[in-house]
Length: 95
Image (cartoon, rainbow, N blue to C red; front, side, top):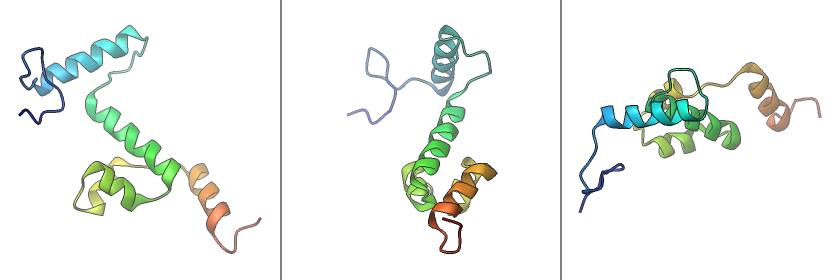
């Protein structure tokens, strides 16, 4: 049984380059003009997941990272988002 995430019509694993080409082609088809690549999609998914869950450990599990430091590389919070979390959860925040 093939455990690959992406396979062709013959159920063979497709190459990373083929995945890159598919992502780039689909992005152009919908009008995205920046150079999109699969890793960018992973980074965006991790960032959105962190913004909605506010739990870095959960994102770590989602991404399959052994080290939390690896997860921190893929995720980033802007100051506004960080201040919203602080205001909502910190006991001394203005309510």
